[in-house]
Image (tube, rainbow, N blue to C red; front, side):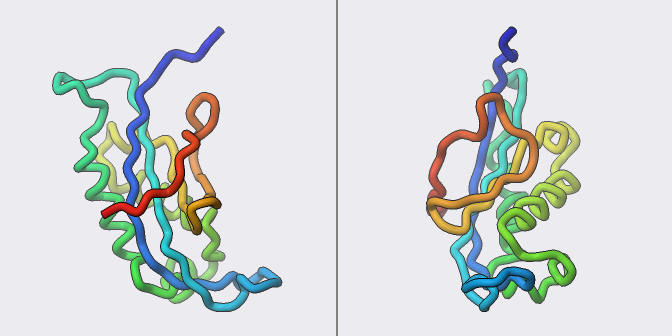
Length: 143
């Protein structure tokens, strides 16, 4: 039996940040930086009267606000990462948890996943997966 079809709405933001991995042996244990891209996806079974699942503007505002907190920082110096490694996986969870708390009820309930790219070809995802896995998208360079 197949899963019912749903709509998935996704937005991206970016931030530039430095970090190092405390418990990693290799070049990533040294301070280095990335131009991160973060994507959030929400799902809906129905569209509203305007024919949309969720307003892109609302999602982008919340995501950009959070990305702004990390932009041009050393992630290891931030209180939320003093005891937690600054890996892409943990950054994705940080965004997911913060979005879950910040988004209005229906959007928070619809939060599907957060994906963080360190490079255009490597990413980490936290949250649930849409049927068939995450869309095979490359990180964009949002304006």
